[in-house]
Length: 489
Image (cartoon, rainbow, N blue to C red; front, side, top):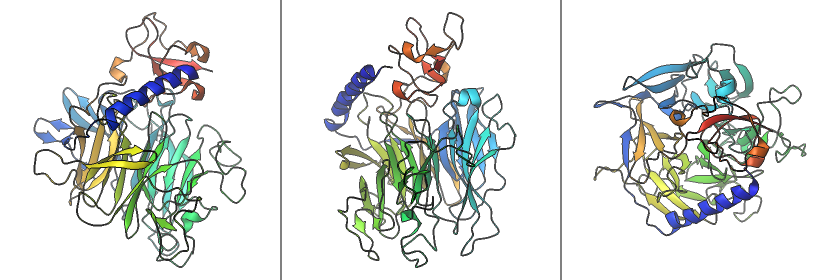
């Protein structure tokens, strides 16, 4: 759509956001309900760490079982939830924080069936210099879109590491630019945490390694011998002291992060060391401080000034402890809620803590938290929102989910339920049909988009200036239903 139309609609959404968040009291009671119930029995998963809806598929979701190496499909079949296997990674390590950690569908998944995985590959054991590899691969489904095609994957990155922890592992495509973003931890000791003397700066501040960074690459091209292209507007492409893949530096272990689909802001949970957990918004070229800073404080072992302009301070930080309302010990990044536009929660950020199982929702004004609410789940008297909280998820309608496991590593996926949260707003695969002229999937040029709202196949609205050739969801003038429409520039 034209920039004038986009800006006016965005302004309208901001007005609505102002009324729905800054003038209303945020409710603090939400039900956490197993999203996959067959009668009175809930479907379970082994240590789930990722959830997403499969593009183009109604009531069909993918869940990653971290240390079993499974990408499980949960789908409705004859009125019941069943589980299929999209992919089984037999080489996945089950050591500590390693395993099957991330998955992302290509923006044009419905046409090319490509998806991308991040997993830890088993090594020969962890020693001072080696602890296997973190691997990013391109794979492809068969025509069902819910089963791997079985062809050899295309290797994108092999990332050697020296410890089993601090992997990061989340990968997502940018909702505007279509590039693949990768969140990588610093690789752990002996060159990660401040207890190490092996590398005084730590890997996160070193600009000649990809560990402790956010990366941004173009999987649709190549640069030299690399199996991906470097976006020309990456922040350090002209600085020989930096690897060109780097988008931002200074992270310890970004555990679960996502884009706000309305404005493409990147929100990340950054797991701390001994004292603090933090929430960051990650911008191009940012230095998020680790291992010089933790939260809003400098590390005692380094020379540092909190007000140094080279550092991007967190949106929020909280101390370690066991009182669920105020503290925790391992942050879990979440989502900005963009389900029902009229919801009180619209535009607010949900996140939680793995150690306490608590979930919070925050209102941010001018880059800092103006209000934080602890969600007290129903029924009354329940003190922990989600035991063993490991991740959050979102479906194509904007509904939010919380994943977690008990002591036996048997976990569930819960939908966050309240009258203000459950949405039917965005176009869903069930509503998509060929337009009624009979010319199914007839191409449309960018010049003809001025009166159309476009969403990508993840259900996110796309700005006209950032459109690429591909398939989008829209509703043509005079037609009753949304349609899949190829757009040609």
